Image (cartoon, rainbow, N blue to C red; front, side, top):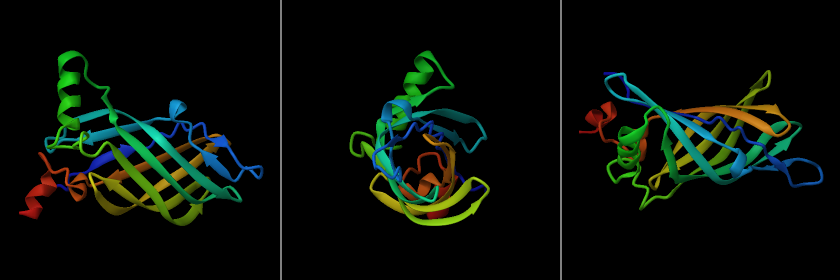
Length: 174
């Protein structure tokens, strides 16, 4: 059975701000940063949209990420591949209790726990991802594109976060 995964592409059009004199700590600028998410249905149909950060920061040492965290505003969830009634319906559906339960869980968090190997400009990072009060370890790629911009790609199985509505993985948990 195909493992159901929800893909979350951290297109951190990050525009990080320097706060330390040594330029090692970078604070995310929520107004200039974005998360592009992608989700795939069991049928193969895909949807995509955006989420906004509430806050976040990374600490760099010799241009390598050594620690960091991000907080996501789940109320900011939008659907970008639909318009009109379909868009509003899917946004309400995804924010509802059967999915991300945004009224009860308005924030999701990611905390870097371990840094990994760097290949070229891309670094592998391990972190704890918390969604709907459930925390699981994830590994993802992170690339500093320029001094104040970064891209990252994170894929996770949403069933591990109790987001099992219409999930192929939920059948494995019966």
